[in-house]
Image: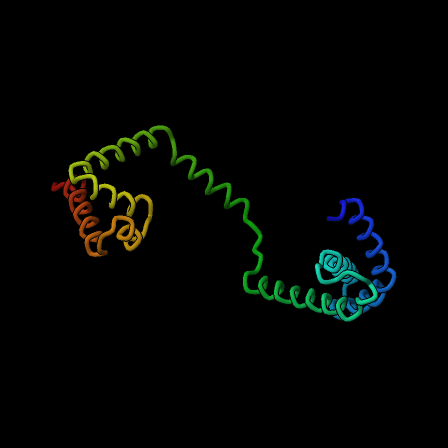
Length: 183
């Protein structure tokens, strides 16, 4: 295994060789394709970084075809990235809307509302206790945890229709307990 200092020196020597031999041709290659000097410089540097990091590239004298293959791949990656950005364009955030929504959420989460929510949840859990542990667990996994019924069936080692019956039993029970009261 090579000491870290030797690797660094070897990389620096290789980078100097690559830079002196390929900087101008790479810059020209990238400039013709991207039309922006700054981007061409970035792509040239990225080409050198990939070459230095490559396990299959060791000497500048075997470089020409390999260098331009790496450069071509960088352009292809750049085109894919640009296509992805076109599919999912950037939309600036509306900070006014974010502030407004944040205020509304915070106002709806006052201490009184939190307390009422906790009490309501406790009442629902107490009502579910009346149905048995398995029905309660299945209902909580499905409604509160958002687990899919087929995953619950796998977890409990039962059929999907059995899980559906447990969920329905709990839903009907809670509906009777907390549903609309006749006027």
